Length: 401
Image (cartoon, rainbow, N blue to C red; front, top):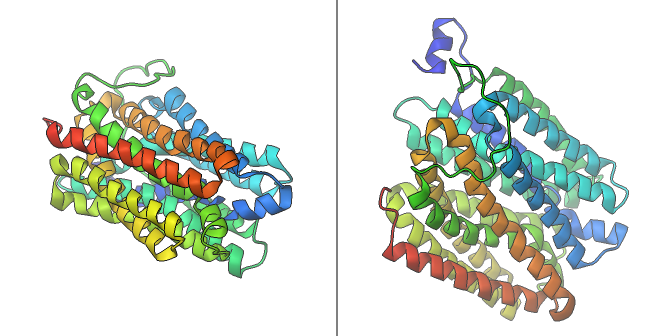
């Protein structure tokens, strides 16, 4: 009997997997709110493009640390308490940005945001999957990954639009997010708990990278595809606004936010297409589509063309979405119930390594080569990685997919 059915018998209908997906999206939204605002912070505080990428990387380091140290906590404590903790950390991050008066609070806010995203990535995905009624597993899988990407995409869109057309450009977006977080906390408190243990609770200790034997045969190729796709997301999330301003001459913050939103929206579309393509083929096809998107991104820098950049964002986002959802579906499906949250967290560790390490490289190269040439080097390196991953997965698709 499902939790929803139990609630109906008791006279109370509790929120289901779509509500959990909404909570997941609201939490992830906060992690990308600063994206179109970095230029304003640079004018106010005064720092280089390298510092922008370091601020972004600090967030990713926070994500990875949370995934490694607490990725399996929801398997022991339950999904709901960990979700509430993640939302609380997101609220503290927003407060840091509201009180920001220099780099220390920026770094603190990004670290807290990373901790929040690290807890949400595995726990939110597991909660959405487990709250789905029988027969809706595929829909729940799409809801979980779409909530992740949709939340990440809404952050820059909302922040850029408010900063361009509303008062308090560095504050209103975070006040709005705090209001949404309050609503998310209320919804989370009503969600059914999906982790129930008949025995005494096992000790709560960090598990690190947990990849059970049932998943090891498919984990590496799935995670490699995620790494390549998240590298593209890191490019757009961390430095795309600077590319738009310095290379393409676009100074409208709403446009910057919309461009970043496009890549995440395209990712959600790619995830929706995965059901038609099939898990077995979506991994290699997604990597190859990602390669085409990276070619377009490189061409946009050479031609200084916003339309070509948009083509690259949409194409690369679709490829990332295909590969990401296929990999996550395979890994989460094969993971045993007792380690599902920890296994999904391990998958996200590899993905977030892709979103952080290459971006730091762009910032370092930009100091000597300039932002445009650094972007071209990045596009070339990630294209090679995605092509290699796609070729391997085409020849050796996950046998149990």
